[in-house]
Each structure stands twice: as C-alpha cells, then as structure tokens.
Amino acid sequence: MSRENSDKSGKQHIRLRFYEELNNFLPPHQRKMEFVRTLPEPTTTKDLIEGCRVPHTEVDLILVNGESVTFDWMVADGDRVSVYPVFESLDISPATRLQERPLRNPRFLADVNLGKLARFLRMAGFDTAYRNDAHDDELIEQMLREDRALLTRDRRLLMRRVVQKGYLVRADRAADQLDEVLRRFDLKSIVRPFTRCMHCNARLEQVDKAKIENRLKPLTKRYYQDFSKCTGCGRIYWKGSHRERLDPKISEILSVSGPLPDR
Image (cartoon, one colour):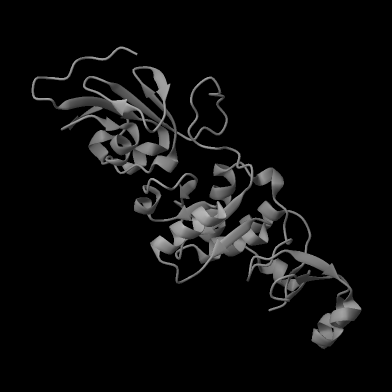
C-alpha cells in the first residue's frame, strides 16, 4: 500500500468518505462527499472514525487507499479512507469484514432506554439481559462477562474500545426497534416466539394444566388447555386474548401461534 510522506509540520492530512447510513452521524457539510481531516500525529482507523462521531460497531469495512484494513491500522498523511456500514446483501468476503454477522450466539444486553425492546426480543425468543437501573460501567462489565451484544441509544457507549459487538438503535417505537435489530443481525429466520419469559428472560417449558390449576382464574381454567411455565420466575403463560392487542408489526414478526403471559 503506497503512502505519501507527511508534510514538514508533521501533521497528517487524511481524506475521508463515509457511505450510506453512516452519513447520518456526520454534520450536513460532510455527508456523501470526501472531506479532509488534519491530525497532529498518526492515529488508528478506529480513532479516526470515532473522531467523526461514528461508533466503530457501525462499521463493517474500511478501505485505505483501496485496500481493506482493520481498526488498528495506523493511517498516515495522504491516505484516502473509505468507510462502509454493515452489508446486508453484498458479498465482501475477500475483504476484511469487521463485524460478525450473523451472530453465532445471539445474546443481547439492552441499556436502560430500551426496556420495551428487551421485552419484545425475549418475546421473539432471544436471550436479552436488561436492568432499568444499570449504569454504563455496569453494562460494559456485564457485556464482557456474559459475551453479549450491546444495544443502546448512546453512541458514546459504543465507542468504548472494549465493545466488540453492539448496535446503535435508531427507531423510537419499540416495534420498529425490534424489526431494526433483527434485520441488522440477520435473525429473522431464527425467531422462536414465546419460548422465553418476557419478565425475567428465563426459558419457558410446557406444563400440565393439572399442576397449575390452582393458580388459574376461573375463565382461564375453563377456556384454555395449553400452558407454559417460566423456569426462572415461575410465571404461567398461555395463548390468550392479549395476542389480539399486539402491535401489528410485532404480530407480523412473530407470525406464529404461541402462549401469551398471564398478567
């Protein structure tokens, strides 16, 4: 890879271009065009990109002077850097792909702003940890300890170097957020609705009606025969009228019958 020599001041002049949805992170005057950043010394591609307020978890491919590189590559004066988002359909296998996709073991950790998304992910069958009082450092510690992909609305949190798997959730509605996350991680084909507790995240298992009859209300006992029980908190689930009140987008994503919670 050829490089130009730095100028006499020692400063690095880097030409940058971001593509597709990565432009949404940039100020209007830098979108969809090449611009120059002047740096006092050589830096890594990760620091260069995040200096433009783009989290590294949003980047799938970096080309420096036309060749793919990793986040640790040191850029130098005169380099031309092209930055691409996660590719959903384009095969870039010959290049150095920077994001793991699809996730081999889809386990998520949602930040305090994504409680409803966490419930919907659990409803879709995905292991999703969530606490409504977790601080940033606690989230990072849990993410590392349990090897989870971090879902957040805080781009600064994703810029921490230790974050290897993560995603900045854009949508405001929880139903749209679920669709967005499943598309980003290519998970729609492995949705397993109503196999996990929406409250505590533990797995559900089928249970004989006779074993939980004393916990059922009279009308539920009369009209329903199939039940599941949470292996963690013990909540009882069945396919009830709650299903009719689901957001249409959630119903479309789940698209199969299953038990809904007693609540």
